[in-house]
Image 1 (cartoon, rainbow, N blue to C red):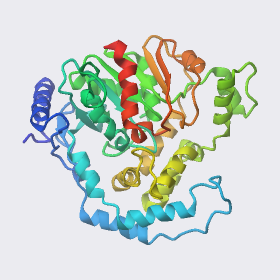
Image 2: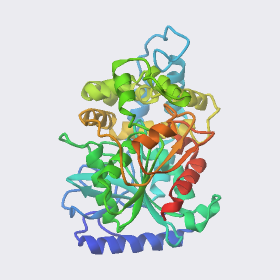
Image 3: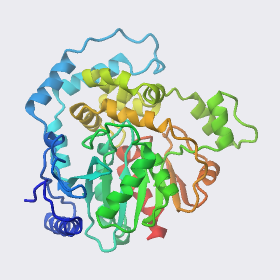
Length: 441
């Protein structure tokens, strides 16, 4: 068993890591993953004494006391009165969050999520002075293409768990061996098991550079990147930086609007003249969105953070109040009618991960960090692929995507999926990734 403080040189670490990964996957079978070793409760001490470029196995475990405390806090919630409207205009309805709390404190089992995570190869490594947690699953197929997949807020690595198997084992999911990927899924800084920054500066530009370091450290000298939500901004930053190893990116949320659209939205003005029908629809949808979390976390993440760290139900309602489409999906899940893989258990897996790691505040700071990054214009050079999911915050017109990314090599609109498309529709999401990068292999 390799120690998490193993001081071996980086190259030897990488060779041993890759060979161990391949051997373990062979022994485990096509869908098998070997267990990690270190503990979630060693987060604060795990980096001490470790070589800064070492890769340390990681295992998730929280104490029974921590889980009992969570249930106690949920049951002792002091509830407000019901909302005074019949829609979602005042936020998460009382009936919805009461059902979330009931299931969370009675039937939900975090240990199942722990077991699922610990069936995957998980690791920690230090980059630019910060510890990063990541999942790394290598395909058994030859010439598999390495991919780094980045989650967003209010999500986590939980979003991407069900796309791993279709990507590493495509022949069992409608693809060919030539479509296989080696999959790397890191936790953003301040999210999940990654360390919380103690100083400013960890914006998406810096994260993009860290991801290139991570992929190089894993021995991948050619790779692609995928992201939605904050992950889309990270992938965009990677494309701007254009490290030699980056072959291309795939994103599913457009955050880089044309300048006249950005200006009109910022000033609350009518749509700019000359927009096409789909451009006008996207403009009107974006303008109508009420993104309270964006304003609060972009301005005062510390203020809202005290509530998120103290009340599980407060944290849950904050994370659920992202957008109307996903909030309606989650409400249906707790009524027993989930959309795809977006079930009440996986929703609570994500929320419980935030609670147990106490990352409600640190995750929200990414909005504050990126509020200080200026608009940078179009992205040139790096091949870019884009998928439009119908339930996304807004449906990005091809014309806008082409203006934002001048080397657009793939654009597709699909019939299912929303903001959490990888979570909700993992098979469809994986098929889009395969199609997007097929020409870049």
